[in-house]
Image 1 (cartoon, rainbow, N blue to C red):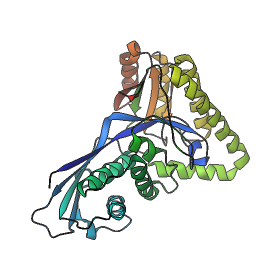
Image 2 (spheres, one colour):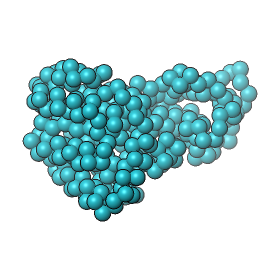
Image 3 (cartoon, rainbow, N blue to C red):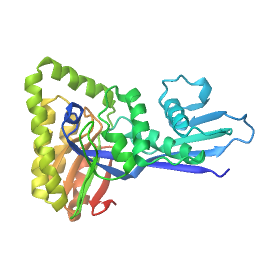
Image 4 (tube, helix red, strand yellow):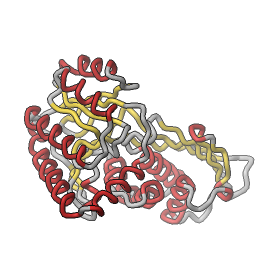
Amino acid sequence: MPVVLGKAPGKVILFGEHAVVFGRPAIAIPVTKVNASARIFPNLQGQPGQINIQAQAISLDADLEDLPNDHPLAKAIQITLSAVAPHHIPALTIQVDSSIPVAGGMGSSAAVSVAIIRALSAFLGGSLSPEEISELAFEVEKLHHGTPSGIDNNVIAHQKPVYFIKNQPIQFLQIDQPTHWVLGDTGEKTPTRETVLAVRALHGSDAPRFEIVFDQIGALTDGAQTALKAGDLTELGWLMNENQRLLEKLNVSSPTLEALIQAARGAGAAGAKLSGGGRGGNMIALAESENIAMVEKAIINAGAVRTITTKLAEGGVS
């Protein structure tokens, strides 16, 4: 049997993080400059049904049967086997790699799951649609995040910009004019599960107050649909800055994030905000194409450990 490679991109949320968990819309795009991969090849020395998993980043080299059922990689494999239901499972090895920052709000866990599900189903002769892959990855996301919204697995499995509302059919964004984005990595790692739970507790302390905040974030996200389609940098920048102000009310920003955000704005970015869970991780800035290098330099000088650029264009991300 041939070696099979499954890949999945990272993602970044442009608008609506945290509010999306409470039923408001969010907009996210794939980031193809970073990705997770799963390479599967036959183990000619193994016994039928033996599945070995190797993930150097987490120092893992173990057989599936030796991992607990709630291990995320084991879960991704088990649910794929159930979905494909092959008549025969040969001995195989799965090698997992990822260049996506962990606990950085870029969908690392969902991308790893999607890569494994995509590769394993293909290796076993299955043909899962992006919708089916997304649904399976969502089950793994529950182990990582407790009560995930579902946006990560959807944008990563479909590899398209999405307008997303929890428990509603996914909508793909139509883009007529390109926009350019710069991500700045704080180097500070805070698991999304941690910040999601913190926002849930905050909401529980004063639901009426924070429902208003979520409504305001939802309205900004709705406005961003039209602005993104048209590539309206002035409107998008204002919406981003307002979204950041509201996220600060949810206590998910941090001094490091705010330093990078202010640096980007000072260097001419149309707008900037945190992206993802917050309290570390990544921020994102919107810039004119000719100003990208200046914004990147300002973000690095303000303390970012690295930057990633991406372009949202007609037909998706390039």
